[in-house]
Length: 461
Image (cartoon, rainbow, N blue to C red):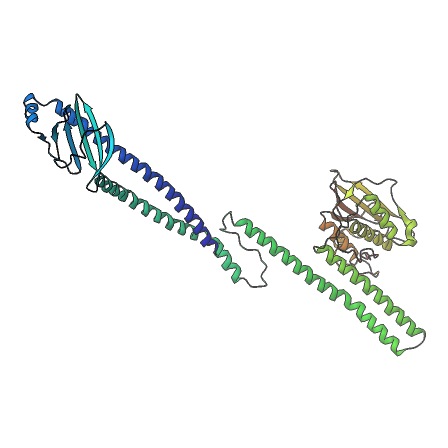
């Protein structure tokens, strides 16, 4: 059932029910009012006859002793006057003895010859006046009143239903236009749906649809970028591996061994690049990394430095105490991000030069900034913003150029940021800011963390 039909049926049934109840209520009150009015008319007629009889001259009463006075009849209304002795003094009909006989004062129903009468008996000055109305005349009058009242009611009800139908059709026009616009769109079109002229009730739906289209577009862009990155970065090591293997097949001895060693190095580099590409794709996607472990700043620094190059442990310098706080970033991702920064600093600093690792709370106390500084040649100010770019290298050293891109993706996903600065005294300082949380640790997820414990290679500068 369509929304239009459902709305019309629901509102129409409600309208009919309410109008029907209101009409029944009004008809009942109208019937009671008409009955009361006609009864009052009947009683007033009896009182009027009583007043007239009291004003008749004496000779009229003397004549009434010999024969009853005849009162001109009115269609549907009868009257009869009895003396204190029960004699008929005046009457409108001679054939209604039973209907107009004297009885207890008040209203009553009497029937004769298949005709029902409404009778009223009134006593005054010893006289008993009885008046009567034909009920079929009353019913005819009530039918005419109902006909006069029902016809406008039916017309108004029909007009209301028609206005309801037109209103529902016009009210749903924006939905039909939206449906037609979506039906005419090309399958590859992911541009936002226009919101001009959209009613306020439909705007949240259009906004949610545009947000969905934006997410789909971002997912497609990420997929295309991953494909392009893989094709771009894997072509060189694959070509080198193929070349070295061909050389190894053609030569012998030491030359063949060196060619195989170069091919093995190319395979290792290719494996690291694939791991980093997959990690970057997962971080930029919607994969959940939470494993239920608390991500404390001290643990993140300790494990990141431990996972760095074992032979370079003596180069690290760090403050004696670290700020307390729970990071709003999964523990393993925070370790991976900090380790990539440390590896990058170790690779590009002079041999044996120290690498300083610091951490401090920001002014609001809601974020923690890790600082990693080397004492290398540094990077020009104009190139600082280029460091997190994929495959961007500022030095000829080997590397995939994805390490800092992974750090930037982790920071962006969880509302942090990655910045670089050239401190006084030379070198380069990377500043990774991650938000803190005071809420409970998220429950463990089934998503594996394969690959993030591998030593990711930083961006060569």
